[in-house]
Length: 489
Image (cartoon, rainbow, N blue to C red):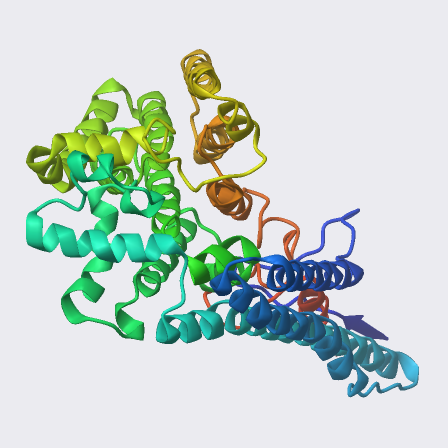
């Protein structure tokens, strides 16, 4: 009598025994995710082409021309590479029980080949989009000196900070100004990104956008890693290559380091032991730096303090708030001490639409449309922003968030309301809620690489930074190993 025994190969987390009634992972899920990626790349290509055709700004048109090619190449890579790889696969068939097993093993290996091909298609698509939508346009515009006006404002303010001790034009000079770009709505900590150009002169490496990108990549990647997202390096590349990040980064980018610091601060605030003071202080330092750069980080700081208080108590929240206040005072206090009137006129009156010259931030958003009706409309828009802030604050008191997901979505809602109702707002500000939403989706418990094999975002969601990945199709191959035959008398 001959018994054929099939053994299971153990995986890194223990033996892989298939539970009764558990459905076998299916390959079509990966194919659907590949199609989704191709659709996203196609939509991104259309957005870039429309930007190149209709934008009135030279830097935006240049980005659109570069990015259209990059996204089209990414779409082709997502669709064509897996098909070409599968077309070269060879199937073997046999007879008998052992031959039938070999045929099953070959089919499983063929499925593994298809999974590897899909992963290769994903990687090539991400690299093509990143090169065409970020690296190429940013390198060309940094060399040619093309950028949106805010980059020049930051460089000019950095030079003023070096020579006068304040980055702001005086209130007397603003009284006779006729250009909106005479104002500087940015806080002093953000002006530091213009220091390389002010100190070393022109050149691609002294462009503030290069340093905006570096800080965003490091902080966003650290936020993903702290939250436990698998393969954070690839996900940073994928998010950076999307139009949500690639477009503002290539032409301006001043919001991106603040966005990365907000994500990192929330990630740190939601981790660590409940009785530890290290994480609250670290979160306060990170979010304090973001708040010292732009006022758009203040709602995130408030939500993070409530989160820390709900998780670790009022003392931890007080320590975090003290750390944040220390950073803000240290970074922005000297400029305020030198010229308080100029700082208020530039960073408060101008963004609220209360200055002599109207802010160039224009859109069809409700707040701007209300403010455009006159002085009463501007004050009405300000009142709406205050009411929205109070509403979010009440929700924090009634139902305080206790994890990063709850806190992050509360920040997304608060920022979206603020940008919708602000008297001087534009669509570009929505990089904050959109970028933060991407981080929240990637850090969900059932996000990439979560339970269920491949996760819900495809082959990029695998353990490790850049290494080989497993998946549903690979598990089919791993579960089937050559049988052992036992001869019994």
